[in-house]
Length: 299
Image (cartoon, rainbow, N blue to C red; front, side, top):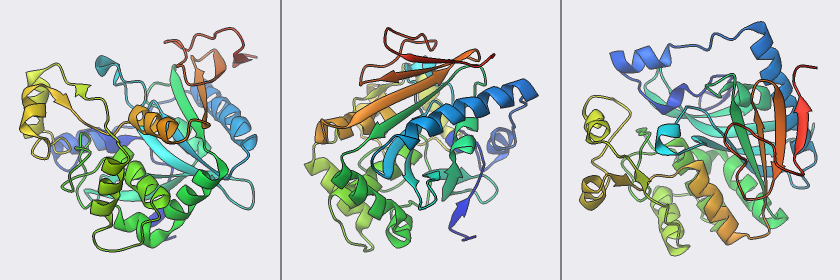
């Protein structure tokens, strides 16, 4: 097991507060799942694996709902790069905040662990974006190139990291910069992050600003260790609109670059799993539409 690239079943504790007493309270919390909830989530993960088994390429983008960010009208909080090995096993490579070490790390995680990282055991979403073969292979090469993957890892984590600064990084920004390294065929080097961000700018990656809608939340960056504002332009701070990489912005960029990419959204409401195909989102509450695949969880 590598000290830098490790296998882990940790959940999405990386996304809020850590590194101090506030951080410790968040990082130390654990899902208290009943046996029935665990069984349903594992069956949900089984449907995710079925969908991945049908993918033609060996690399996809995968996202999960993770923490509840519905107050910001955000469904997905955490994106990763998933690949299939020679044994047909899928693994998600992603950035996490290692609470005990108080620093970001790159972790590998199986699909069951990835599904367990969804905070709400009664409602969860996973999105899979299937890439054209050439795009998938170039992304795979960058993600599995240990030296480049770690070079792209920032030293300091920020959940609300600005997309075009080198001060901090969140999990989705690492995915974007890894994508840029692969699709831009960027060689390793000490300035790799800067070159990856330049490639993204030249490719017109411009995330729709996230509306914070609260001065209190902006003020929270002063005492929550994993929130920062000093990397954001002043005009964005004053407007309470921050440009942050989120799974939705990652997917929108991919769809723009490769219109032939395909998207599958899989959700569960504790009673059933719904598989929805296409770029339109599934209805809130995991409500199936005509043509969606429905798998009961209570049977």
